[in-house]
Length: 325
Image (cartoon, rainbow, N blue to C red; front, top):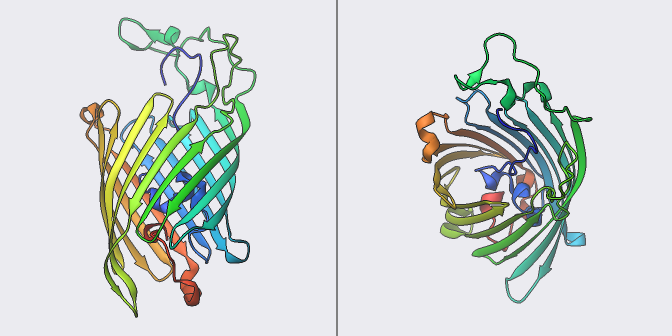
């Protein structure tokens, strides 16, 4: 990492396969199944760059009809800049469902997280360590920078988020507010009073489920699920839109991601379900100006373990969340 270091800031890591990591998207998604759901996610972003980004996540959630509530636990680890900044977090999630008229339902979710970030100061390269003629590091050992090393290279903070989903058998719409308390995640003291903490992330989600083949014996065996995601965090505004198609045991989809200033990526995915397991792979093909720098795109693997087949009497759902199960 090169630059004049005053604050180290970044947007939240986000999975392209959000349907395999719904608790990352909205805490109201906790409890989309009466049986336990376990998910594991891995993302490798720009692998051909020397300072790549890797993100890991694992979660559990389940709905309990006796209390009309969903509960979930979410773990995440993010490695940014080849180990320059490492972040780990654990979240507890709760959701509550309200039945409205006919098949209309609403869910509210809340998430409480504890996050720890660790900074590898020795991997940072500052302006006064560069050769101004060559634009690269000087030959031989790099000189010691005049930048002041923070007193602590570890930061732990508590974070809160809320979400809501309104849905029926065909459509859903949701809103998420992440980092409600805008926690202080900086490593240095800022005396200018301009730092306002981790920026709040606002996300809107819209989707539909169109059943193409549905019979009494096997249920829905083919469906089409178009979705739109709109996210804003600080100055970053990002739009994702696309469709996931499911047919028997196979699911595949195509997506387009656009930032406020330029097109970002085309995303293709394919997944296979076998018994309790669903495994999916997706690739983000960069179409922004970064494409000329050969980043290698982004690779993502998602594994979902849904135990609902062990409870066949509970598999009748009056909603449109097949892609999340």
